[in-house]
Length: 382
Image 1 (cartoon, one colour):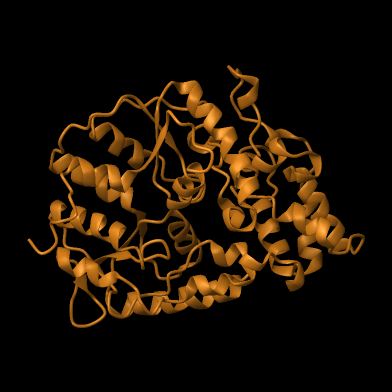
Image 2: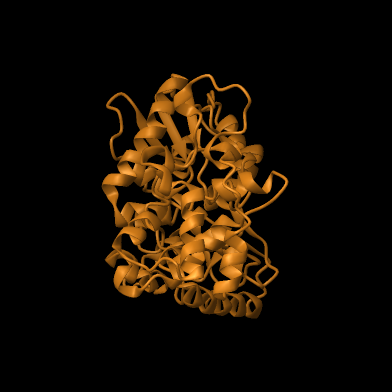
């Protein structure tokens, strides 16, 4: 993107301030009336309009990068709410595109160290644990095995044997024929590459993924991690549908009844990359209903959902600030009266464990599904 293109996009923001708040006309609690994690926790320049002014200044040459500007930029979780809400109005400032461009052009020495290593997110670990899936009948399409639907092994799965076992168990229990690139995994791409301003690396990796999907005749890709889902939906040119694993669970519940879970009312966190980025709001709620649970929605939900605070690399860059962001959401959880918060994102899960109230708990939707179908961890190979 040229400086003129960046300026043209940034100039579309007229600082109307709409992106600061939720769209509902009546707000039951003033604490839930604002939306931007950094803007509501810090102050003006951290709000979307402030960030757009920074983009203007950089594009015009009136501002020079320094530690203070970089600090503001990396306080944003890239949750996409400002972009989404703006697109619902009479004009549209492509805030996500602008913020991603700023992360590309910020000098390397000002990038947080944790994000300077973002390219490592696209590397397959030597000691990956994907062979666990074979124990549950998942087909290795790296070799001669064939399956038209595969599970995408992202960075949160590829070396996580316990989560792989839960998913393998659910695939086996569902009776579905699924494959995975096991012995020769696909690059486990996710949002980390965008957070670190390395879209060029991401695009090269996705091109490799596209070629291998075409070679193997893959018709559908199931993603566990919403961040992998969103970047594949955005950058893949394969024409292959990428879907959330929550859709697989929703279909499974229609065909095979689970046991009843002993849980009181629950509430649900819409992950930004599953909801706003991938537009998947229904399937997780169908799963919760299918498990026989009572859902108490938070005021800010679906496309008005408040980010957990981990996005944009925040959990790695500034875990204390990510914890402050999460505290805002825990207040809203408490207001529902629910004691269990469910999410379908591993990063939401990790960040919500920071500062979790003692009388509350956080549960991953996959673990909840496995529990409902009697998973014990001893089912492999049976």
